[in-house]
Length: 146
Image (cartoon, rainbow, N blue to C red; front, side, top):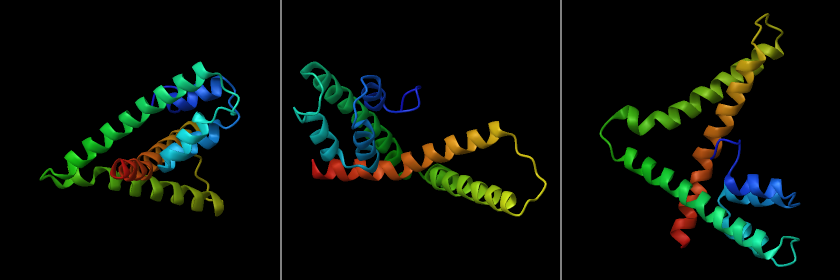
């Protein structure tokens, strides 16, 4: 992901007001690369040929970036260290448990005041970890199909 809260292709599609940007990004995140390519490649989707070519190029770059992360994770899994192998699953569990605990505390009106900045940080981290953790499985499936 880049520094603008999204993938390069998603940011580009939102910038040109592409009506199916969410569909493309959703397909990429879930690993349905073929559907994302089909939507962008469709000549009747309202994009100019230059925009379509540029979108496909940056989509390829996003996929390569995700594949390199997957390769790095595979390399980590070959390490002998427990922490190296399990840091991502442990982070996922910790962030999920922290979120559920905060939800329960809020539900039972426990007088704990959590600043909104911390809640936003937790939401961003949790979303990033979920997308990276589960979205990478889609990239692995795509590589196997290729």
